[in-house]
Length: 565
Image (cartoon, rainbow, N blue to C red; front, side):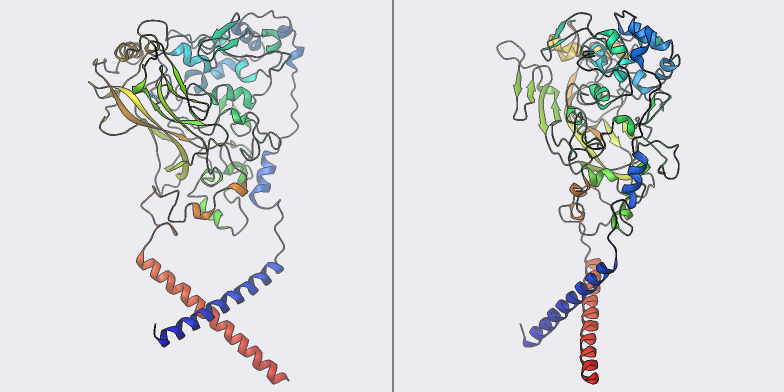
């Protein structure tokens, strides 16, 4: 390096250090002149105000109702009939909801839903498997396609409202009972657990507002077990810590699900296939008539301190993307399910292999699994709706079949960058028609896969069954294949404390979490030689300007001191 270059870099270093010193002095002076922000300021205060749980007055003590105390009930429909003597519109309201029909109310074709033409890559499909699947239905007796959806006494009020304890005894549906509890003591072979008949009168007199335990009986165990389906919903949320979820923290706010999933005429706020959870992004400060299903409804669209850069992100990035850094933080979730390996026997009998996370990694009935904990989400533009592959859609088996896909794009005012769990699978399909298949899995008949372990028989039976309701489904060709699949789950629970939320560098860096989202320039992640050059010139020019200004002030101050002396 020439002497001239050395002098130049030495001068530049002196100027940079001088500029840094003056910036620190100015910053300290500014900090001293500004009072610290009170914790009650900004969006946090509004969120606390909007979501503060008032002291609830329940105007009816159901334990005092004579009809419940003296009913001598022996079945769920008898309890429901007693409920309807007062709540005479409740069953009719339930009949209009997705919890009852398992079809999206926003779909006039009645194709979207677990009871329709959609499917997944965990338990695949409900039709022909009702006795097992409908253990999570809000009704009694849905065992086949002859179920009477118009019978009001078939509504199960207790599954959502029973507040059971040691005195009342449990209220549990039998896992293979078509939504019914047992009438006599019975062991379920699938988990070895013994189920007992409910104390119907005591359970009926316990009813109240739904709790996390009520909702979690189904939603924490969706897909066949704890944490299988949703990465952000599992049994750890029954009594979560603050680190797991700041809203449901059992020793803090202790929110129940219905604090956010508000209800009108038994219609529970939430996303429904082609219908977003909410299109109104106002907060409760603007209107007290909106639902609380979005973060903005309580926290507003500017939840951080005034002037904080994060407030400029809320029209592009969903709150969940920063405030749910990982999911399945306490209990594992299933990330991969390979049905093609099912059917293997050991010594002529079905068997299971348990893995390191105390979860099965192989099951003769279901195949191979991969479970994970503390999973980093994948990110997509999302407007609140998803597109689905239906049983009637042609697929390309040479490519991964996305059984559902988030809808959204950059530039759409309704779209945000959201976190998702992406469940991978190897799933059966009709290789002759290039259509996804609906196998008959559960049952004691020889066509049930878990009885015969014959995929051709199971798919033939499942296809014949669903064609009774949807004749547009093609007849089974007889050829069985397996195809790689994806299924996307929006992540919106397990909100971490603010001190555990993502730092800026999680996205604005070379190892950005948003590396798969392209088509736009992101500072820190993307490189552009022209922009980088302009930026460095601006930085160097600023340092020179600030450093020169600092030196001038120093010399000026010194001259003034000499003149005054």
